[in-house]
Length: 412
Length: 119
Image 1 (cartoon, rainbow over the protein chains, first blue to last red):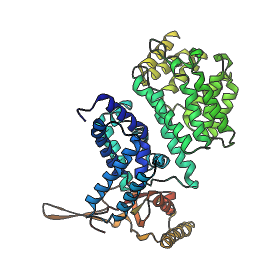
Image 2: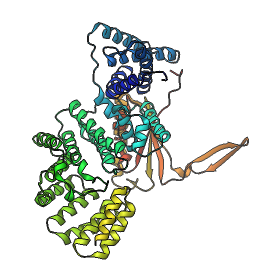
Image 3: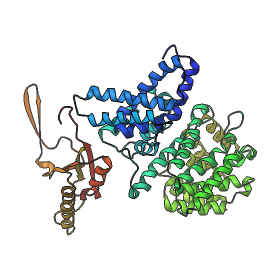
Image 4: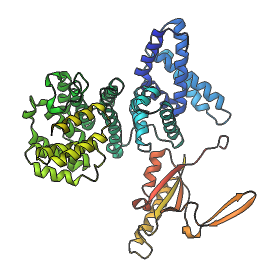
């Protein structure tokens, strides 16, 4: 890639980021092979660097890339032909190639929904689903993903290539799941997007540029999903929930980089545009009358963002929502949040008992100890509060959070 | 694509021959096999005798060594298998769900390797 004008390379990188998922999914659709499609697209990108440096950007770079990738795939299939008869594939590819030349402008079918379901297939392990989705749909480089997840480049590269080999070898399908499987499989996709968001959200300000980028990436993926599979209330619920959270991201750290909890945030710095968008998406979802965990979490986020001051927060309503969420998703973290809401509605001793029940499952979860500490402090049980802060501090991975927790402990 | 469905379960877990529900359990196997036959995807399958009947064989330094017992002593034991010819992993998963042992044990799906030039 040496000798290419930096501007052009940047432009190509941008095109690849924007179009990779669409081009790759269109290629997989014709070729029936994830590996072959990726190799062919890689080839096309490399040729684009040389060709475009010489003759400038074509009118439709995406169509150009697709056509060159198809020809590269034809070559690859021909070379392999002695192993297996692939004549049918070649004919189909050539036909498509010619159709494209006559059609103006050529239309690239958007098959990304299939690709998302492939990347988030439950037969792949969770971390691989996340990495693969960012790589293949989001167009991030392996290095970018490795950095965002604090992994070594080679480790991440191996993880990605293992996942791709499994897709090929185990014939993980490239298709939209049947109705009967839709909810379960969609949930796997939504969890992946939420994990990406959460990874960015829990990052401190020190590594902010790379990692808060993950929040933006998750929002982009959720928006894409609302376009590819419109009318699904849980997709809308996830997007609304993330928008309502991300709207507050600037207020979460002060100029010195110290963590600022929700009730101390400067609410004027919340992004009103994002809040309005989040609320309207949530309204649309709720109107479909098919409640689900992400819609409920978005509704909780909405109540937080709608309170003009922390004192105006509608905690009784939040508690009701956590009760509903716990009924749908009885996880310890949900019960933890429910306990905090209980305390905020004035049931401190009940809340502390509820936290006591979670000591086992959440022993290694930093927010649990922070909550135990805070409620113990309010209850004047200062010994418990100090011990719990110590645990929270030792488990926190972010410097600014550690600093905040230490300040809280010192104030006791 | 052919998948080998390996049927694992823990000894003494699930319906035992003396249990009243054992007949239903076996009927589940006949039903699964019949479904595979009718779908035209059945390429084989058998129940295996207990791991206490297993023998391991290996050759080291040109000498044959035989050992009593299964290859790996694990809680969950291989009790049988099917070979199913499915369109993709999703179909294989759907078919594996029909195996009664999935209710208390685990089915491992392994795609059968395609050797180039073999077809």
